[in-house]
Image 1 (cartoon, rainbow, N blue to C red):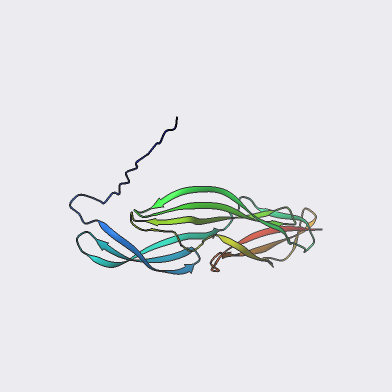
Image 2 (image 1 turned 90 degrees about the horizontal axis):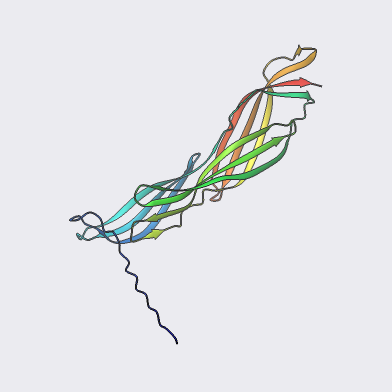
Length: 208
């Protein structure tokens, strides 16, 4: 025997509160963006028609979070047997978490948390926190728009400097000096915009 099975699905759209106009059509017009150190600001321009006959160009702003948070200094840093040769030996980026979130009535996204780790040859690391939005969706019930700028980081530039804070002195028979340690990090986003962060810490060194 053979059987034919059919299935009907009823799709319903929520129009809004009773006795209030509802959206009939929503058309994409343009997307303008500008970048800063905290992320990417987007102005989404739509042409919308409503059930009461009203038509308008609607500009909706959405901020894409995309930034670098500086490391927290949890303890004092002391470099033993220092030979004026501090150097970066490795850098790498690791993912920590992904969280689905929504903002307002129309926007949803995935919040990505990562770490960017800078390793130095004297057995200490810097851990910068990376936060950015991914998979951003605008959905007003009529129009679904997903073509937003990519806030992920695709490359990084590092530089650092050691500036003497005071003259060298003897401590427990070891020549010692305190430096101001400056590290600058520049992250390059997928859309070619940049974000900067950095630290300015005191570091003590014990010379060889």
